[in-house]
Length: 254
Image (cartoon, rainbow, N blue to C red):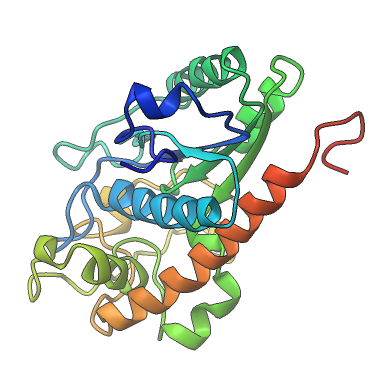
C-alpha cells in the first residue's frame, strides 16, 4: 500500500505524512469509437498519474495521488448513449470543493491532471486564483509529449485514434475489442473559417463522427503506447519533484 496513493493507503500510513503536492486526475465517461471502453480517458489519466507519482515519490517528492474523477464535460457527446455529463460549472464546483479540502489539510500545491479534451480548466484556475491558498497547475497528459508524437505515431488522432488505442493496448488490452473500430473519419463544417481553425465552435460529435471515433486506430500497437507512456511519466515525475522542492513565497511560481 503506497503512501502516495490515497485510494489504496490506510490511515495508519496517511496520518504520518506531510504531503507537499497533490495530483488530481480528471477523466470522463464517454464512447471511444466501437473498440475502446467508455472509461478510456479515466484509465489513461489514472495510469499516467499513478506511474508518475510512484516515480516522483521514489525520488523523494512528498506527493499524493487523489482518486480520479471519472466524469467530465460531455455536452457535445450527449447524443451518444450513456455519455455521462458534468456541466463545466458543476465540474468547477467539484474541483473547488476538493481544493478547499487540500487547503484544510495543508497541501498547498495541486496539479489538475486532465485526461479529457472536453474539460476546459484554465478558467477554473483563473476563478480560484484569488480564492484559495492552493497553487494550481493544469497538465493535459496527452500534451506532455506532443513534441514526440510524430516519432511514435503515424497520426495520433483526436479521439480513440492511434494514440488512445495504443495507450489502452499497452495498459488494458483486455478492454480493446480489436477489429471492430471504424476508420474514425471526421466531417468538415460548411464554414471555411471553422475548418481552418480561426473560428471555434463546440463540436457536435454525432455530426462530426459516425461512432464517436476521430482518427484512424489502425496503426495502433501496445509498443507505441508504452513508448509514449515512458516519455509522459518521466516528464511529469520530474515536474512533480521540482514542484515539491519549490518554496511558496511572494514570487511563486516565478
